[in-house]
Image 1 (cartoon, rainbow, N blue to C red):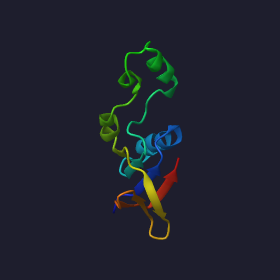
Image 2: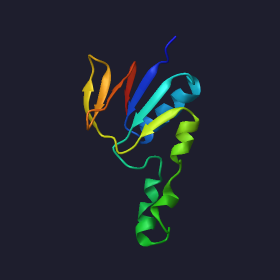
Image 3: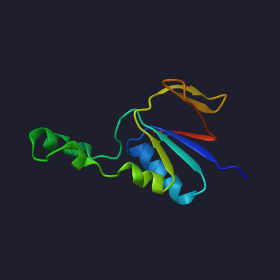
Length: 108
């Protein structure tokens, strides 16, 4: 039986929480998360402290490194802005033309 392909558009609190939830309950699903940002899962509330110099650099705010996502079966694609949703063809198209098919789509 083919794996259920689930694509998440958005890697903020809603998108990542949904992806983690599905990863725990459907470990055989193929999960892909798209984020327009270069980094995901970081403490946004800590940004003023980095700018003020109380926290030495932005990397100290990162909660989960990319390996954590891979280890639980989530393919997180950073700096990947979605240009188009093909709802009839059940695919997302990233800027640059990369097409990723899905069985289920979650927009977070």
